[in-house]
Amino acid sequence: MIKLLILGPTGAMGKIISELALNDDDIEVVAACDINNIGEELGAYVAIKDPNKVKISDVNNLQNIIEKTNPDVTVDFTVAKATEKNCETCVKNGIRCIIGTTAMSQDFLDKFEKLVKEHNAPAVISPNMATGVNIFFKMASILTKYLSEWDIEVIEAHHHRKIDAPSGTALKIGHIISDTLGSDFSEIAKYGRNKGPSKRLVGAKNEIGIHSIRAGDIVGDHIVLFGGSGERIELKHQAHSRLCFVTGAIKAIKFIAKAKESKIYSTAEVLGL
Image 1 (cartoon, rainbow, N blue to C red):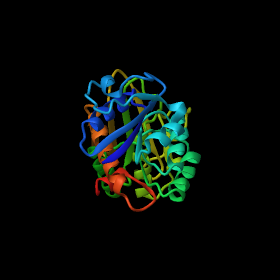
Image 2 (cartoon, one colour; image 1 turned 90 degrees about the vertical axis):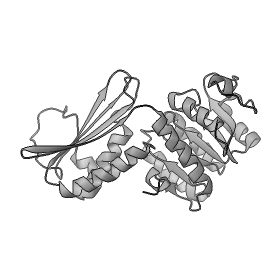
Image 3 (cartoon, one colour; image 1 turned 180 degrees about the vertical axis):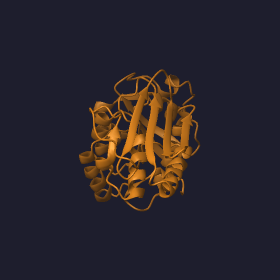
Image 4 (tube, rainbow, N blue to C red; image 1 turned 30 degrees about the vertical axis):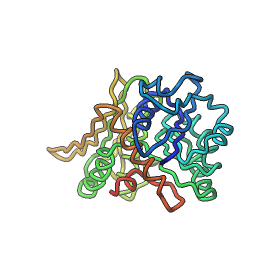
């Protein structure tokens, strides 16, 4: 039985993760920490019968909660500032982390990787844990190999509550494409083409456009547009509900509980891709 700590159970993703985890025979939710709904029973909050009656605790008391409940794995889909603080605490206690939060700083990621090795606590960090998206990543790389002279644009759309733009998934796609091209993403990425007039450089090796849309309740759409002379190819993934991300997170929890190597894994590794 995997002893799980859920960070941010009242968030949009955290609530669904809590529901699935409480219903999973391989997982025992031992703690849930948040800044909201403190003292409320987690099972009641997500309308699931929880025989352990785990209550939502104040995340500011995270170290004490860890010492009392001794979790094996924690899952965090909150916001960058909170994740950087709380997952550092978790990994220092030897807890294996599943992180789906985006927009974390590179300084934190570099530090976290060292802590993972130091404390023998492997982790999964991924901007998108949906199975289809990770196959989408693979297909984008394959198409780029054949279409390196074409123009390539990445377009993403999410609900209007999403804080970061572009999405972590769009940035991941951009890095995959630039790595396939042998280019430096930071040099060729053009965000929304809104930085004033500039000379248009033709071809993906010189430029990749990254565009963001924030509207309504869009769960998550990503398109890679490959444009050639007289033709184009569009590779598209649409998330119909957050369930696709959460089922990936549950797979990651079970994977990391058994992982042998102290490193940061990708969802592609979790899925055996």
